[in-house]
Length: 112
Length: 112
Image (tube, rainbow over all chains, first blue to last red):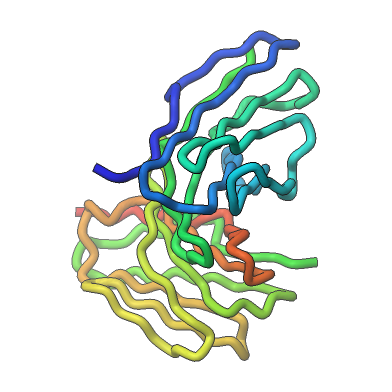
């Protein structure tokens, strides 16, 4: 089945640690995105990539980093510089010039 | 500043009635607007897209209207069912480059 797979579903991080969230898609989509969702808030764009080896910052990129070495994969690293990392993280993909976005099931990150 | 506004109060509706949700936006001139459904702890799922030159779009029991003069979209669920209970998000692409901006969502609760 085609889709987007995010792992893990739940992730716990100690303060000061970096952690990487996985996102893989087999839809052959060119564009991939990372969003953050907080309770009562809309989705906010962290990073996006429209092609392999290229990515751009979204609205809240500080404290995050990404890579796009393969078309299928777009991992997100939450660094220790992110002051409030506890949130629900969503990965999405779309065809080039989409516009429909396909989302993964999300990773809930909690800092302990 | 640019805003996408959805009603923060949950809409409680009796089964069989029509649920109507509103999405208002300011300082955008989107070419299209999208609606997504999100269940608790899950990623959003695309429902409908309506373009700026379309007044109305239908899909099964769902209907979306788009008024670019009022800068408003209405989302209707006719003959609502308890399975329609979820949060509905509107989204638009302010720069025409697939970087979607989302409203905070509007929860619908269908009472049997």
